[in-house]
Length: 142
Image 1: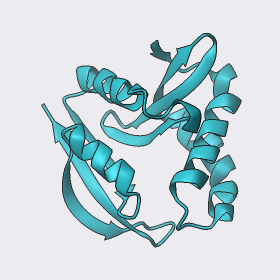
Image 2: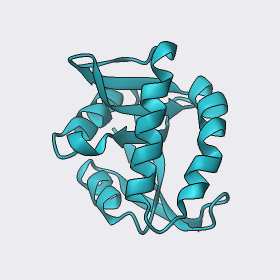
Image 3: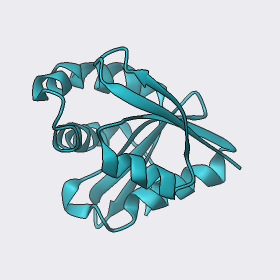
Image 4: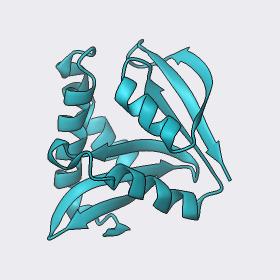
């Protein structure tokens, strides 16, 4: 079930963030994610509206929306991927927002294809200002 994130669940959400980033972005050194953990936890998470997907008291995934339109994070724990949890989280946000944008690394082919299946279109290819790796800026509108 999808529900609003509660601050007392931050450690579980951040574990999914770290583990999934390391697994999905094999082309970026692991320390990049470890080094950015506290910034995400202490700066980005408080500024975002986050929804979690939870079943049987287990958080299986989450999505964070920044400034009412930008998907700053969408992560599903590896053991629960392929169960349409990401799609459910996207659909939940599509029901709340008329426009969504995101940035995704070009080399993360599975994620790029997932977002295309969800109706997102590539708008720009650019270098990520923090990592230097190439990313797509994608958007969806009603």
